[in-house]
Structures are given as C-alpha cells and as structure tokens.
Length: 81
Image: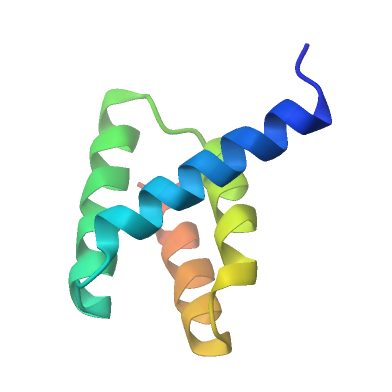
C-alpha cells in the first residue's frame, strides 16, 4: 500500500514530465496529442475511467478556467470511448 508522500512524489513526476513534453506546443497540439494517447489507452485497455479521473484531478489546479472546462469535457468524451 502506498503512502501519501509516495503519491505526491509520483504526481510531481508525472506533472513535471507532462510540462516538459508539451512545452513549446500550442494548446491545440497538446489537446490533440493527449486525446490521441488517451484513445489508444482506452482501445488497448490500459486507461480506465479511474485513471482518467485521477489525471484530471492532477491537472485541474494547473489550468485556467477555460482549459479546465475543456479538460472536463474531453474526459467525459474519453469515458464514452
């Protein structure tokens, strides 16, 4: 069983990796790539609804209001794939 500190460290690692990977890309490029990767994960069974919810909760505090709305809308679309 993981503890809270390990969860925080993993979250920080994921967010750091995410920000490095998408640095310099347009918002459209970022969303297109995220959606493509998520669709692939849904298709091959490696991305569950719980995973989607977890990633959304990690990212929401980092986004502006409009981006948060987009992320929530996209996450709902992904859950229906």
